[in-house]
Length: 238
Ligand SMILES: Nc1nc2c(ncn2[C@@H]2O[C@H](COP(=O)(O)OP(=O)(O)OP(=O)(O)O)[C@@H](O)[C@H]2O)c(=O)[nH]1
Ligand SMILES: [Mg+2]
Image 1: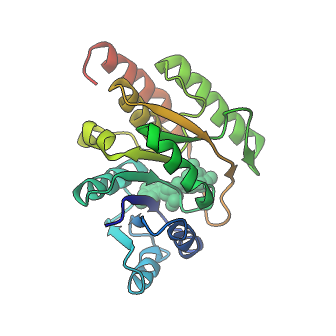
Image 2: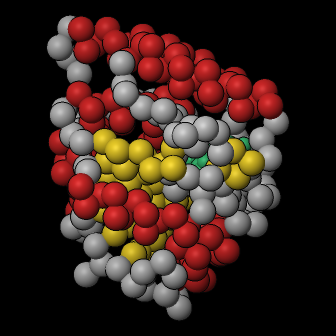
């Protein structure tokens, strides 16, 4: 049985998905991929199903409509727990995350329970993003450190690897946030439970093709969610 599951949520990623999947699987025979698709109108799931006929290491969860990144990952995490995977990755479909960096995560995970791909350790490694987007991301991280005390350079990134015990320890049904907020919430909960978190430097590239789902709503959610997290933590209700 493969030990590692890479969860890739998709919404309209037909231009990317069949390229990224083999790149991930080629990293090691121990790796499986799970695509969680929200009924993408562009037929992403159909492409995945075609590929699955040839490849037993590829899995698919189909949801009925666009329900957001956070709940897509939660569905993926439950799948991973039920099937006994030890290392569970979050990764985007759009080539912002380089599959060749997966082995470095797995190496780091030998001595940690959560490995975060960091764009901002030892400088900034983001390619082709407009400056506004970079500033937003950078200051989102400054704000997150200030609000939560999380000792991280990059708490909003979406390329990460959990040991299964972290996912088992977090009450996944109580994870509510979706966009960047989801990334922060998961890391914060893991940190509060005393799990060892390390950052591994990554290079982040702007999406290669397809459309962005980044929105004002996602930024607002993260802004307010941090107040909520801080409040709950003070009340001991995390
Ligand atoms: N299943 C599912 N996947 C989603 C949803 N929203 C985004 N995704 C996927 O999550 C990953 C990250 O989303 P992106 O749109 O790349 O978000 P981003 O990286 O912040 O922004 P851009 O790269 O500029 O688009 C991609 O693989 C998306 O297809 C959703 O509601 N449901
Ligand atoms: Mg992206």
